[in-house]
Length: 107
Image 1: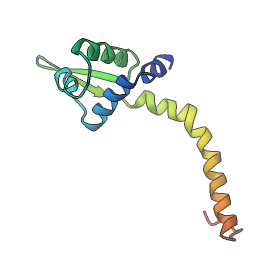
Image 2 (image 1 turned 120 degrees about the vertical axis):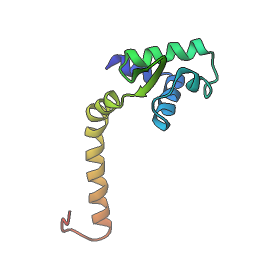
Image 3 (image 1 turned 135 degrees about the vertical axis):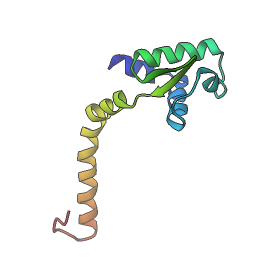
Image 4 (image 1 turned 90 degrees about the horizontal axis):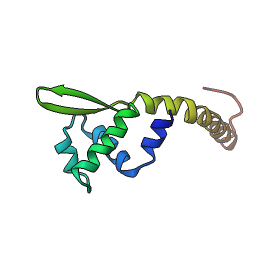
């Protein structure tokens, strides 16, 4: 999980993940068109994303396609985010009911 957090710490790598989310299965050339950095820098960022298991590679003939792997992001959400948001959402629901004068639980 440390590799995932380290990979997500860089705005360039987050931008690459956003590009893959928008259109999965892109070549290095296609990704470079949207990045304000050298091809070598994009390659290095993709390598770190691969090492963090955030990007998967599929070879189609001579083309190397990059795909977003959302599983590590889901694991972070499950472990670090979801457990904190549940209590907040429950508190907002309770506040809404109180403000609306509804003491009965209808959910």
